[in-house]
Image 1 (cartoon, rainbow, N blue to C red):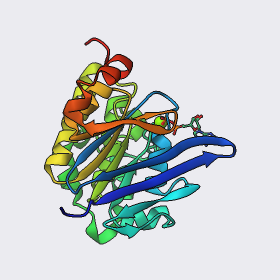
Image 2: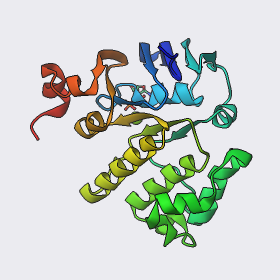
Image 3: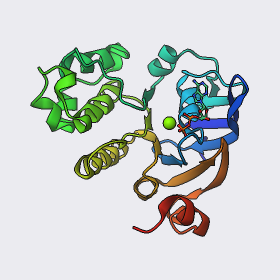
Length: 236
Ligand SMILES: Nc1ncnc2c1ncn2[C@@H]1O[C@H](COP(=O)(O)OP(=O)(O)O)[C@@H](O)[C@H]1O
Ligand SMILES: [Mg+2]
């Protein structure tokens, strides 16, 4: 067995006296797509925060390619190919689409992809390159946030609720893009409230309940798991 590209080991995250993440462990193989699902407040963003370096865990470890990166600053993780697309997009609205992309590329300089590659992957951005990002729809802004991560040619992309607040048509487009990203061999950790959609594209799923892993397994099995169906999938 090849060693996993990303490993999360016995992770604990606390904010003051709030334990947001308790003893969470999982592995992501190179090229894999792992979904992390759970209710609002379950600790999903805190896990991604610890993996991306935005949040300092109380204990536990994060490894990339077997190397302990738990204390590595965010910019070095980006340079190592680990990139977060944060919840709520956080693109720069007053800058143009092209300028936002260039900022994403600047984070990895020589390793970055040509802008033209991003316009091919995200045609909707091509038509809007000269517009301020604030003029884009919510779905288009999400595409820009993903493109800004992808231009850094990451090895691992962490997506935090990419479909949140989008119209059904844009949700479809976001999931199409996620499949394209994985088809390029990029490893993906996908956090979603849309559990069914997430498990349908993932190989493996993990269910977080109040900071701890409640269920883990092949995504196809979680889609059938009675407790997961009852709590997170419901009727279609
Ligand atoms: N910066 C913070 N300060 C204090 N508590 C926080 C902070 N961020 C998250 N929390 C708390 O940690 C828990 C997990 O939050 P979060 O990781 O954002 O969950 P999720 O992404 O699953 O909605 C929640 O109880 C939340 O209120
Ligand atoms: Mg969250």
